[in-house]
Length: 331
Image (cartoon, rainbow, N blue to C red):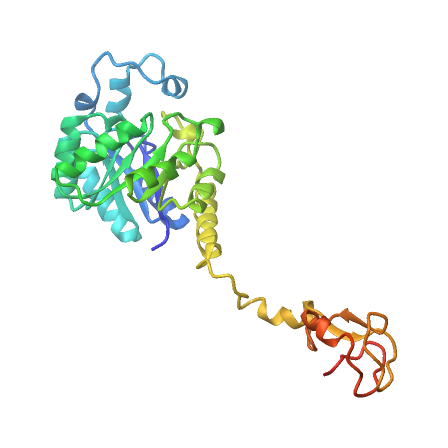
C-alpha cells in the first residue's frame, strides 16, 4: 500500500454542511485516501474562560472566547451521519478526530475503524485508556511532545488494548516555521518505537509533506480549505483545492519514482543503451595485419560493437582485415 493521504478538513466547514460537502468533494477530486473532520462538544473540550491560541486570535473575532468559537464549529450526530453517507457516495474514507471519549464512542457506533488522536490529548491519561480499549486502529499525533511523552502515550495505548498504532510527527503551530519542522524526528520515532510513522503538516506549501513521504512517511495529513480567505481559525494555514491536488499528485509521483531499490537499467532506458554508449572503432584506415594501437583505434558512438571495456584486449592484436575510418572493430 502507498502513502495514506489524509485531507484534513478539520473545522474548516465553519459549521455549514454545504461547505463540509464541498470539502469532501475537493478531497475526493484531489485523490486523497481520506477526508478528516473533528468531533467534539465544546463544553466538554474547553473551560468557559479558556484563552485562544495566538494564531486563533489572528484569524477569528478577538471578542469571543475559545468556547464560543468552538461552539460554532460543532458537528451534530445527524451531521456526522450525513457526511459519512456523502463520503460513501464520493468513494473517500470519512475520518474524524474525537476530542473526548464520548465522541469516540459515537464515532465507533457510526462504523469508524480508525481513531486519530490529536496532539493535545497525548498527555490525557483517562482519554488514552478509553480510546485504546475501544479497539480501533489508532493514529497518534505528537505535536508539542518530547520523545519520552510519546513513548509513555504509546505504552498506555498498548497496555489498554491498542494493537495497531501509527505515530505522526507534527509541530503544533499554524503555520509552522520551516526551521521548526525537524523531519528527522519522524525517523527517530520510527527507530525508537518500532511503529509505522507519518507526518501531519502545518507548514505553508506542499514541499515538506513530499519530503516526509520521501523519508518514509506512511501517512501524510494536511489541512485544506475551499478558500484561505474564509473566516475561521484554520483557513489561513490550509491548502486550497488546487494545491491539495498538486500535493497528492506529487506524492503519488514520488511513490512511483522510489522504485524497488535494485540498480538495473529501467525498461524505458533500455532502448537508449546502444545509442548512448560507445564501441571500439577505427580511428584511421587500418590495413590487414596492422597492430591495433591508441594511434589507429578510438571509442565512439553507437554502442553496437565491441565495448570499450575490452580496450586492453584489443590493443596489441593484429587486424584480421582492413578497416575504414569509423568502422567497428571486430575480433
